[in-house]
Image 1 (cartoon, rainbow, N blue to C red):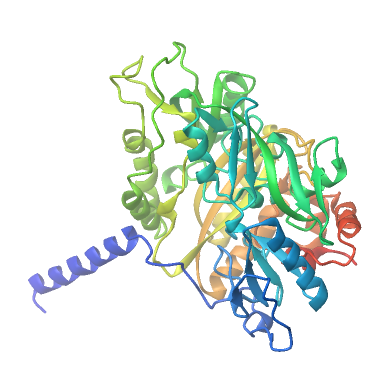
Image 2 (image 1 turned 120 degrees about the vertical axis):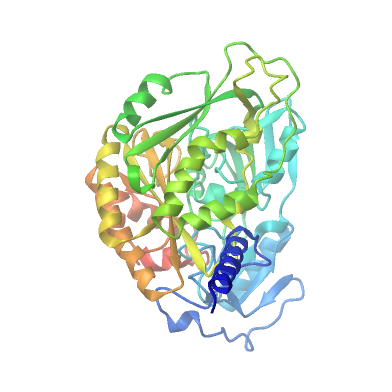
Length: 520
């Protein structure tokens, strides 16, 4: 082959790789690879002996289901499409009559089978999605299958905003409440404190309304209850005014992050949103930190707030994140672009409308309106989330342990975000025992046993690091933790499972998390 031909061939390969990294997926990613290996997850469920129910709107009978990890393919009895309360009641009655287990599911982004169980009946809650805004009382009533993106659109038209939500808006409200999620709204942090009331259907078909004072015990168990105490039907959430923030980013040594937060953010009523990020670039690996602060401008903005806009840079961001999976060069380029280019791509109020021409002004709704479509791709790999909660004063100690574990195991860590979660006095299974930082880790792995084993080992070691600094870890992800680790992080867990048996004495509502860790 001539030199010219070799160069041309290399260019073609390079162009194809660029297209592959930047291209949006053409359909839902699926994988037959299962980890940990289980023959039961690859054998279809036998349903011939079970009667059909014409009142039950099955969208799938038999077959398989998976979650966002793409590592958890599991045979199920079927999936019921829920569009009203009666569908839930009929599904529960059908399950009771036929000896089936039931799990409610939304977008299935919990990664350890928290939204299904083998041979079980899955309730697809996405069709239960009515949204009603009470602007006078600043409450939105939302059915549990509605997406946060739809809630945001409805509120934005009324000049309102959610008080707290997950940092990505593709999830269902019911799913968020079931895992007691949180985001970049550091006050209150988790979503649970913004819940005024919820309606839940118990496993026997009874519907109860629960608040902090009415059916209070049920209320505190359903929030962060992983769907095990009842099926959430709808919820009343607090909302706030949409407003404009001035966006600032500061870079520092990771050991200075806690002091900076305490001096400039904690207790500062002008700050509306905040989050941090740690570098994974080789030159500053888990040693340089950024903090993004969204603060009300000193001079009040009196102009109209811009309407929500979709992200227009998905292809660029998808290429950058996928390129960063390949090694040191990609991560170095990504961190440089985040520091230098990302501020230019940010959706700011036009400068001729801003009080300070050099400032980046963004609406609360726009900054919280993130679908992260750039994370979806055509690659034969999967991205795995984990999260650890550590006391403010021990952040640097945890990061040192994180760095040692990841480097020792060769885990492909792509991103670390730092969130703020305040002490949880609402739910029965709190992950925040005091005011804490939540470190959200984003790993990449291929569909191989070797890479899965690396991440399994990494997870167990990181949990020990978190426990060693009086921290905890988040439960909605892969079930790699031991019963001993679970009980060290959550000493309330046995009482919590006892309450589950009180509200669901027949064990109708279950999932893989429950099946693996509940003591009978």
